[in-house]
Length: 93
Image 1 (tube, rainbow, N blue to C red):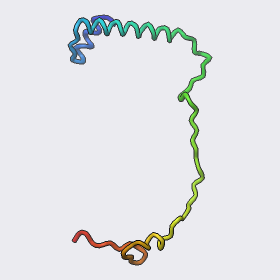
Image 2: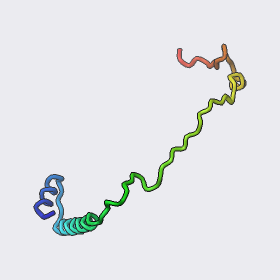
Image 3: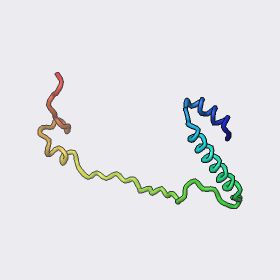
Image 4: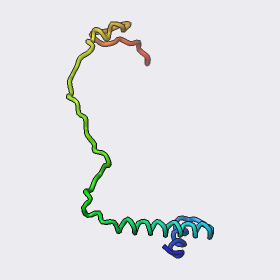
């Protein structure tokens, strides 16, 4: 990246960088470009691709229907019931 590209990016993003900030950015970008070139030079043909660093296992349990409470047990504490349903006071008239 050169100063002309940085100037266009500055205008596009409506920024006003000082000369010191521009120099700092260009030095940082140059360093990153060098490091990317080093990484690109590494031969990775024999390395197997991976999506996750650690293997992911899905733990699936058997789905069993267990009826722990009966309707009658749950309605023991209800103040009033009608035909197996909780009876509540009317709130809206």
